[in-house]
Length: 418
Ligand code: LLP
Image (tube, rainbow, N blue to C red; front, side):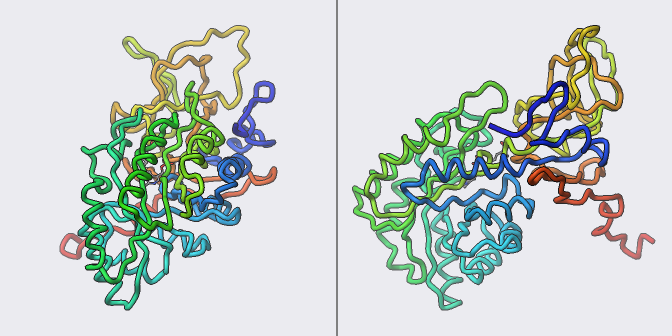
């Protein structure tokens, strides 16, 4: 499943001992396994082989250029949500005709940039957005492809914050409104509405809600006799963080492909987490252990600014010792593993059993490849950490750690204050 395993008491990333990396570089840092990344992309590609879909990696999950490049070289396209992501996507050398652009709040300048770049299509989330794209396209003398993002009103089992396909969320367009847009599409001479898009949420472990959403979309296509060139079924495939039993790529394909059957449109997938989630870990050092009034704490040098998922979603990430302590004279104790940030929400795990860690021990926070670094910040004036990747047995730096001067580089003291 992934390439982080113990050999004896030592955690390895592929064939490299994580402790050796941690001894060499500054903690905390992200460490990725190239093999795991590519394996997951290929798993999905192989499972859907018969349909030859375009798999657009959702780069919000992790937009490091090396990660993007590795996937682009495998043939992946990219799912973007901002002008910044478009910029990075192009830096990674993806063919523009493999870029799809989602998001409820695209700015005019971002639309201009994407049209100039000649991306495959926009996933459009409202009629006002459609109007603006049409206006910009007309100004540029272009006709651009559009997929309407449908909100199918399906509730998957996942955290509320990452549920996106129910009526109460800001995402997509209802079937009724989409029907009206199709009816008056002649009003919009500079767009071709030739795709449909659906994305119902993230970290969804069963195929049932996906199937239900796709069925509703297909039914919509049939009852309105729509001529569709692309069906974008989004991302959202769940992974194992704890003891989940998520659908495999094959099970997912087996559930989805029969629905599509002989239909003529091209299938598009936009997975992020499935591809990159388990290919990365966050390695951190134990600074102190501390006895609280009724809890014991392990204080580490990574904080919620480096990995915010536990703080905002209460997300579970497994926490492993990079070197397992010799256990014969130790009993595991229960700890909260916390960071140095001045908030009680700054934790990585609560009530976790660990053999008493010593100062200077390294811990690995697992499953940190998706929405880890990409959601990191400089909160508490903490420079962002470095990222490394093991590629074919060798350690590569794929992002420099920031330093203190990076923290002030963009800030200006007005002369009146000097
Ligand atoms: N397509 C669209 C339109 C999306 O909004 C997303 C994710 C994806 C694809 C990729 O979803 P994935 O395959 O990665 O589940 N920060 C949260 C996850 C936010 C997901 C946002 N949208 C987390 O850390 O769990």
